[in-house]
Length: 314
Image (cartoon, rainbow, N blue to C red):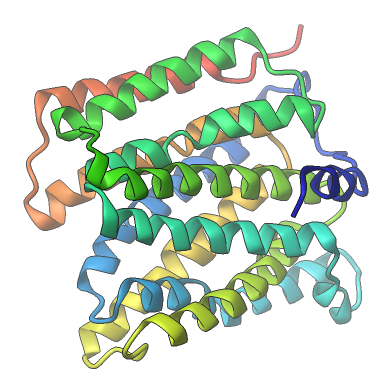
C-alpha cells in the first residue's frame, strides 16, 4: 500500500489515549504489561524449536491457534464496556493494515532466519524502534523526547552486544539481511497501527480482528510453502499451543493493552526485552551459554529503557 493511503487510514482514527505528560502511578500497570508481553514473545523461539512443523506452519499456528482465546477475551471486554457482542467483529482499514503488517513481520522473520545468520536476523529485526520513533512523529504526531532517542541508542548497542561477534555481512547473505530489515519495518508498522487503533477500540477487539487477518494470510502462505501444517507428535501440538496462547494471545494482547496508555516510541524500546528474554530462555532450556558481552548487552538495554521512561509530570 502506498504511503499516502497509509497516512490517510491512520488519520481516520486519532489517538485519544493517555497523553505522554500524564504519567505516574497510572503507568505502572501498562509498563508491567509491556515487560510481561516482551517476555512472552521472547520465549517463542523455544516453542518454534520444539514444534515439529515448518517455520511458516508454526507462524500460522501461532496466530490461528490464538483466535478462540482472543474471541473470549474480546467478548468479555465488550460486555464489560456495555457494548453488544457484535461490536468485536467491527473491522476498518487500520485493523486490516495491522493484521497485514504482523503477517509481514512473521513472514519475513522466518525468511531471514532461513537466508542469513540468526545473529544478523536478530540484530536487524531489532531495528523496529527506529521505524516506530520516526512513525510516532510523522503519523501519530507524538513528540519524541531526546531521552527516548538516547535510550534507543543504548538499546541498539545492547542488542548488538547480545548477538555478539557473530554479526557479519556477506554478499551471499544479502537477501536474508534485507528480510531482517523488512521484519523490523513490518513490526514497527504494526506497533504504530495498534497505537492508533487504541484511540477508539479495546485491546482485545484489536488483537482479535488483526489476528484474524494475519491468520488468513499465513494460512495461504503455509499451504503454499509447507509440505504439512499439522504437528505429528504430542510435544509438537503442545509447542504450537504455547506459541498461540503464551507468545501471541499473551504477548500481543499485553502489547495492545499497553499501547493504549504509553507512547509508541517508549513501548517499542521495552520490546527490546524480547531479545534479552530469548537469550535467558535459551540458557535455561537449551543450555546455550550467556557470555559476558551478552550480559553487558542486557544491562545496556535495561539502561536504555530506564533513560527513555516517561517522566512524571510536575
